[in-house]
Image 1 (cartoon, helix red, strand yellow):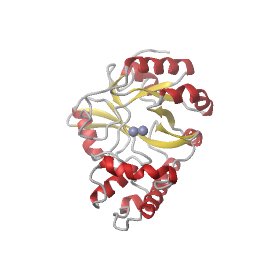
Image 2 (cartoon, protein in one colour):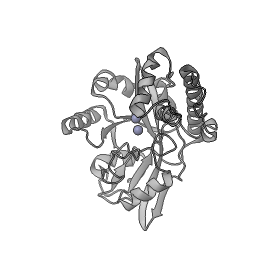
Image 3 (tube, protein in one colour):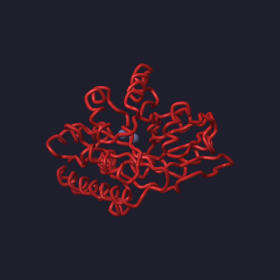
Image 4 (cartoon, protein in one colour):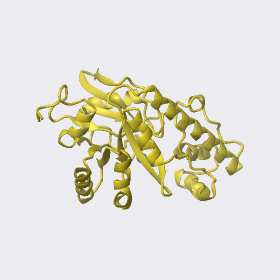
Amino acid sequence: MSAGPPAGLPTNARFDLHMHSLRSDGRQAPEAMAAMAANAGLDVIAITDHDCEPLLPWGPTTLGGRRLHIVHAAELSGMHEGQELHLLVYFPGEMPLEFRRLLRGLCLARVDRYEQACVNFQLADLPPPDEAARAGLRALTRTHLAQALIDSGHARDTAEAYSRFAGSAAGLVPDVAPRFLGLIRMARAVGGLTSWAHPPAAQVAAHLGTFVRAGLQGIETARPKLPGPERAGLQKLAHRHGLVQTGGSDHHGWPNQRPLGQWSFPMREARPFARALKLAA
Ligand SMILES: [Zn+2]
Ligand SMILES: [Zn+2]
């Protein structure tokens, strides 16, 4: 197999394969994020909104004189043995219709969850889900519920809002997540490349083998502030299980996060991913 430079991508291409726009719980519009990414010298990005269809066209584009490749992707939440885990799903082209339908269904389940939580809080003045959410095109997360509590004067800040969710074990904010293993199988059935997002060390030790047997193809081995030894441990496991590595900033546009493009996932680690997505030779 040739180890030459991938077609269309520079040998030192910079990736960011995990970020959120205001279509889920991020703060910035997808178009603005793409412009920022190109301007900051990223070569490949994936906007991985929770349960949301991509808005920007798949493929290479030129922004401000810089070439940027946009990968279609999403981040899904799934339950495994009582834990909520996150799955990144990437596509080697346009996101297929079957997967878009699945995402819309997940967004609609989030509308139900939001409305049920409003009933459970016994607060009649919380803002109702907006039209995009009701159409299954925007993911209402716990962050949105917290913001609704703040905006309507029932909490002073996010911390206080979240403390009101403390009863969520009792069902105040119901879980919406389907089974993690089911998500892996559904994503693969429609040609998605699956990667376990920000895997917690204890969960990796306990469950990675099970997930790989269910079809998991990748694991997120890199993100800002991940300690070196932990990153090395994940890379070792990726090699042992024959998994592709993905890396992303999990950028949300929050004030405490570095601007998009300051951190990146390097080509030397991203190459198997790039090949699997046919971005590379
Ligand atoms: Zn996540
Ligand atoms: Zn994320």
